[in-house]
Amino acid sequence: MKVQDYQSINRILNETSAKNKPGEIYVDNLHSPYIQFSEKFLIPGTSSTQPEFGDIKNFVQTVLKYIPEAIEGTYLLPEPRPKRETGKLFFVRPMLFGSSRFLYVFSVDMLYLGGAGSEEIKKPGSQNMTPSILTDRLYFQVKIIHLHSTKEEGENITDFQAKRFQGGIFRVESEKDANKPIRRFSEIFDEIDFSETEAKIREELGISPEIWKLGRIYSPIGIDYLSLSLRFLIPSLPRTIRQFRNFYPILTETEAGIPEETLNKYHEYLSSFEVERTKSKSGNILWKVIQKSSDN
View 1 (cartoon, rainbow, N blue to C red):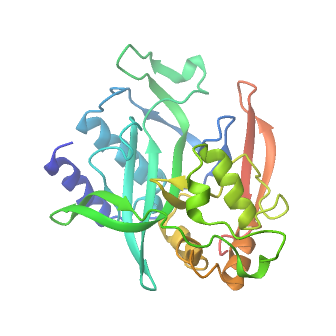
View 2 (cartoon, rainbow, N blue to C red; view 1 turned 90 degrees about the vertical axis):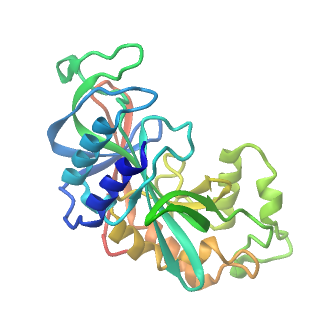
């Protein structure tokens, strides 16, 4: 994407101030979250490897129409991050809590991910083009990472580097005991299987099935950009920041141990989510996610 292209979109994002349309959150059988609306809209076909700027701009307008809170005041990155995530748009916004910088990362998928009936496929896809789909959903991801630095072009953020694990204790102060020796980030991170690593991190943080009812359906914490990240299921920057500010030390307090008060607030937030198992139109397993209170 050319500099003037993403700059023009960022100017629009900087002027955005609107509320999301009502929608319901689901996680599909591939563990991908999406928000579903009561009305349908068209997602035109585009290049599956390198979408044209016109297609990107039109899709951003669709996102602004349905979930403007997710990308208000953000910067659209000129290319996916990581680059292999073709077909996704990445929006970022840095923020400061205490003496630490963090980065809000919102991604949304332009590509067809399945689930559409034959009557909803307005134009079939080809070898290098995605189909034109009449849909009622947007697939998304919301993450916050500990930020090391950003790369900028004028007033626009074009890339970033997360703060990597530097060792340090990954142990909640209140849970230290002789039978559970302290483990360090470096010990955990040396393991290649990230799913196993994430499971161990959840265990260290005391995230039990009673606290996080989604279990393995969707992990609220993980490894992204070679760093620890917190993951959220509400496509809204203001709401995400309001929640994150209560437990941001989870991403920073790796030397002295995470304060018990911080952990309790995180557990309270995780406990606010309920999940209902259902099925998609094609018969695949689907989970509906419900947050009991938007103020947590």
